[in-house]
Amino acid sequence: MKIQLLPSSFDESGKASRRQHLPCFVVDDTVAFDAGSLAMACTDKQRDSIRDVVLSHAHLDHIAGLPLFIDDLYSALTEPVVVHASADVIEVLERDIFNWSVYPKFSELENDFGPVMVYRSFDVGSAFSVKHLRVIPLAVNHRVPTAGFIISDGRSTLAMSGDTSAMDEFWPTVNETEHLTALFIECAFPNELEDLAEISHHLTPRSLAAELEKLEVDCPIHIINIKPAFRDTVIGQLGELNLKDLAILEVGKIYDL
Ligand SMILES: [Zn+2]
Image (cartoon, rainbow, N blue to C red; front, side, top):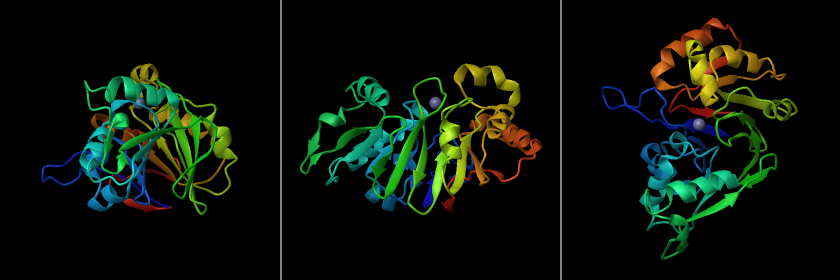
């Protein structure tokens, strides 16, 4: 399984920077998990080949690139973009985003080939298939209904927390997963912003360390979704934890799991 966190910001020379504003993880150039920078940062090849988008939740940073992605492809689509999300998330998208006020209601529109966007709802805890992948959505602990995912291509298996604070339901399934290849887990805020992390249901290096105590499997751990303004501080504090197998997921790098 190849997975790439698409870039979402630029350095002084116009090249992709390491600051991650928007989560969008592309698996095997075909399935996007969250759509933060999907339209803005996918390659032409990915734009042609991604027709499935799996959403963890409806916060803006995770969905920002979805309306623009469908807009870009509108007349070229010969099959609809399939948005996989929980019923709660679909309700928010239809009410607050694809409502003609913020953006067109693509779920009601067709081009010459048929519908341009369809929803496929998933239930937390129930596995579903997307292209060649088997995905188990798991409840995590964020401010709004949010799913983490266990993603398998039959050869490698990735667990990804999405936005979350301390989790209960996620870990037992992760721990019973055979041959877990990697864990992607968030760490949004530095320790001194513990109060903000608590209100917004995110992790800090300290609370992340407590979470990782619940992980019973040895596998590489990659940190995602660090708030860009606190990136250096969070990375420094993560380093002080001296946790083995822990690294920051690099923006733009293609990981072969
Ligand atoms: Zn969020």
